[in-house]
Image 1 (spheres, rainbow, N blue to C red):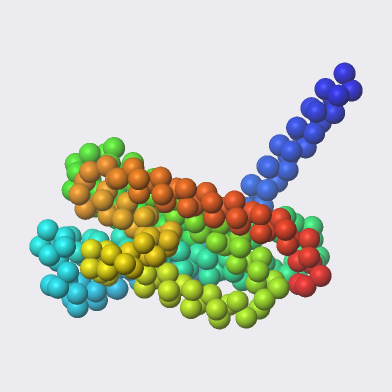
Image 2 (cartoon, helix red, strand yellow):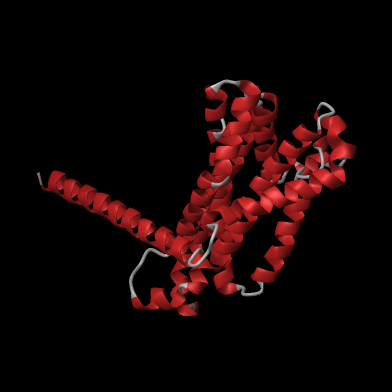
Length: 272
């Protein structure tokens, strides 16, 4: 009886902890959105303006040269560039913000007992809100136009979930390391640039040398971009190997992020 009572109490405490975590997460996400867009005219739609402008620039410069890889259609190249930019911009914005999230809230952590992981997680959820409100409706429209099948639009969920897993895993890692290495902010800018240029955003992956392509495939964003393009451009279900590759990369990075965070978080308070 005592063991059952203990298990019940333990279970209820865990449920209450989860509820408190969710409530706190909602508060932090709302605060982040209000602070970021206070006094802004376009609000969250600023996150959509950047990929739209860059899509126009890339199409004007590279559209004629690379359209042959997209059924000789400049419109298809335009859509391909947009999907690549959505992924890369989301990743760079999300992870760059999570890198600073723990250190920027160091004063609060020294005053109030709060789960430290809530800060990088809240940044990922806030950026996910931007993605859902901004780019996702356009991706759904593109998919419905090319396929005329709502099921294909639902398939967008898989690469987008993988993208958020990748961002969460990387975010946990870099936010943990930044507590100890404040120069990481400058190094990470270079890492983001390398990931961006090694992703087939404005160029088709077919032009990359066969010797270099296996190295580029180590970039977790590549399979996500290619999956989105298959869904939005062809209207066909994505290659399952790409879906599983991106999803597996995301899960691995989340696990690595959790391990890194659990290993280091006890030393955070002394350095904040």
